[in-house]
Length: 214
Image (cartoon, rainbow, N blue to C red; front, side, top):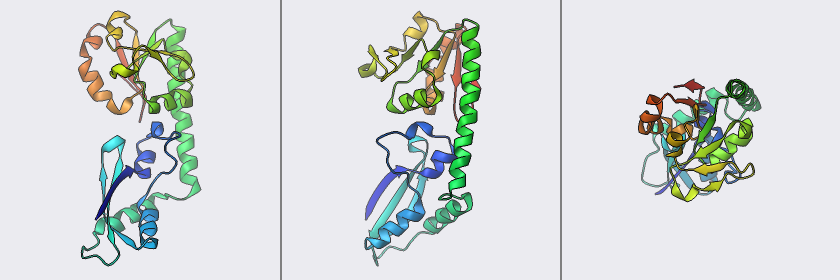
């Protein structure tokens, strides 16, 4: 058998996984076209499973056509789900675009209000997906600096906008009023790790899938 895991377009849409959309990711997968692709290649998709990796991924198990393993009902079930959701129709992506626009407007308006009050805002996370989010939402002018747990990213600058990337210890030293968790998929462990920041009067902003202030 051949086993693969890839980002699942249904989760990208349902969970607003916007930061997964960047130059390395040229294709966004669903079960229906994968099933047809393998069939054309003399293989058959016999099992699919939705898993939580990267905010929502798809694990596929494939065998040579006519192999001894039976096809799981999961294949037809996810094809049916994709059909009911309208995956493959242009209008669902128009809806996604409109939703992104609304989320951007809400976040930028809130951050702009904070800046107008003289509040300082730091970002948390400096991955390639975070860079995508910064550009998509136009956040560069809002952020005084970015912190990241990965030491290989510290004491460098973000691509394009050249925002300083430094150690998370800086949120205790510089005491920004708000920390925008750009790596929002990891917001719960980040906030759990930095309860001391909250206790000293700081606030976290989780931008997606819906904006939250902690």
